[in-house]
Image (tube, rainbow, N blue to C red; front, side):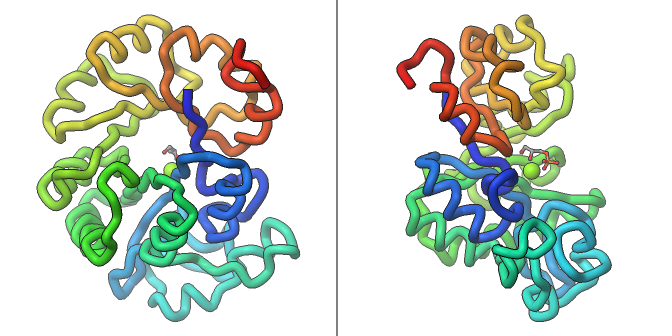
Length: 246
Ligand code: G3P
Ligand code: MG
């Protein structure tokens, strides 16, 4: 079972920053998950919330700020003074660093409104085209099926993962249309029967965001393929997966 740092390593560095990517490398992880939205001037930037309020010293919606202004904000001090001066990275900046560090990136396409999908996907696709990035080093994920459909057209060689909270009954159809590679669900709601069905259908099964190794010990037996967690260091310290040598 693989470990993936959530928003970098959100427990050790300010989320979705370049400092977070360096923590991923320090821990020896192969995968990181990040969130992408557009600035007002249409640049894909790496930030989770719809506003900059929680994770920077600024105020207002991400999509209401020009890139230049966004990158002047301090995206590190809210987490710890040691990270003062971290800025919101563009997707391009982050992918270049991850390529250098040999980290595979799960790019979550974040849309807070249905109509954002088209422009977001086109702009993200342009960043990918400017790479080059190897096809197996990137994966798109989204709660928005329109994003997955668009990415199938724009970047057919890159894998796509369907993000859900609870796995719905019609998950096979939801996976089939955008040609998804993997199913990503909230670990809290996953049942053994669902895990069995997903694995029997041949799909990788990824779970977010279990932060306590004890709570998901049984996931190895259930066939879960990846844990997307804020605290990968705790799993590594516990000799994860259970039963493997520490
Ligand atoms: O990709 C898994 C997870 O990041 C989805 O939820 O809100 O943390 O982006 P959220
Ligand atoms: Mg996310």
